[in-house]
Length: 116
Image (cartoon, rainbow, N blue to C red; front, side):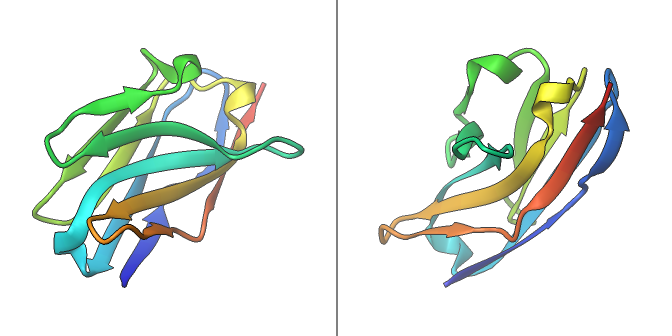
């Protein structure tokens, strides 16, 4: 099992910045990748960014150049630095990790609200 605890959500004005953190515990040695999804009201959950054990990253097109995902392996923590936030970034953000034994785990979700 892997447990995830997220922090850093909140309310921010358009153009502002926030940083999300997600700390993993439990079977952290089995983690293959860590990432962030988001779900806006009435929309499907979508992958925002992901980082693998080798440091490779991928982003949804809508956040490229504005969001940066990073990882501190010693702390088993993944971060999402979000700059130049837009109203369309408003959503619940979920941390997600995938493991070598084929299961993925989700954080509890944190609300990001960007006011225009």
